[in-house]
Image (tube, rainbow, N blue to C red; front, side, top):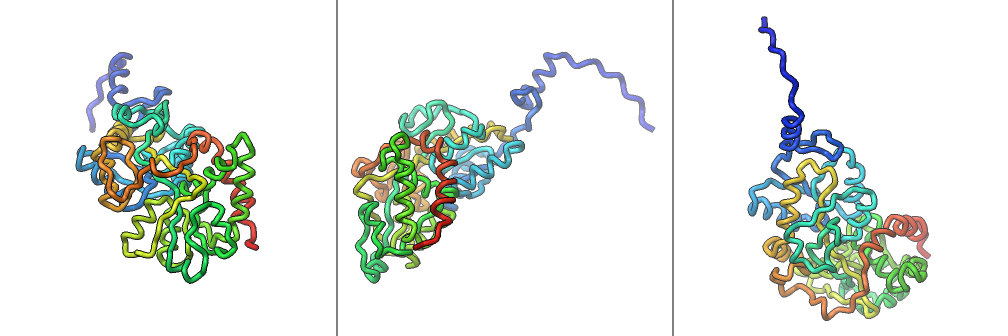
Length: 355
């Protein structure tokens, strides 16, 4: 038989407030989960890069880290599906237009890291929705051996990709799932005058003309480089650093070129997921990701993006942005148009028969 409990006195409001402050509260006043001393990351780069980054964070801070490798479109879909009970604390890697699109749905929480001061303004959202950790430039990855057999020259312009000799000989990802492919699509919008001057229709018309030359639309933006390496296609539309990394894996016939008309680029972002269960650890992760030490990890696993922190050392494989013709890529505008533009691409182009 248990002894009767003593009647408890009412808890003072001030004490209750202090207790909730320790545990953490949501804006509505309900208690939030206590930070478990780890961070769960939706990671948009290569598997090797994601593993190296999370391991590096744990080694530097002592905070545990887990990741799930997801392409840009998949990451936003998963974060949106788990909005009521987020499975991720931070989103790291993948083009910032995906982050901008996610922000429109209220999926991200603004966070201006103290380390963001070192990052140039053009590589971060002013309000802290996302902060850039690397820059990747869109280019062509050509297998010179395959093209030598097929006949067409290594492409050096967007127009040259329309050559009938390249029929079903180009690898490209699908813009709905791949940030790389959406960068390709938005680059065409810019090259055709921008969204306010008929650029969307011009871009879709270009993609319709390109469609017969695309073998298939892969889920991941890295996949076309692998297709090129295996000789399944002669050309892949990829971020150039992925072609360099693939070439280093034993495929010397691969060659990188950039379109003469101008090319787009990604600013790979990092952001805090709204409602994150491990919010404090996620903010530590973001702080660390902006440091030179974190941004120097990429080349150790063949990820040759351009670091956004000017103090980070660049590997010799990293392309010099000053030597390339880049389009005026507006991540916010690209993100605002992403859902409708990818919907139209899927309905009007990806599902169309190949002539």
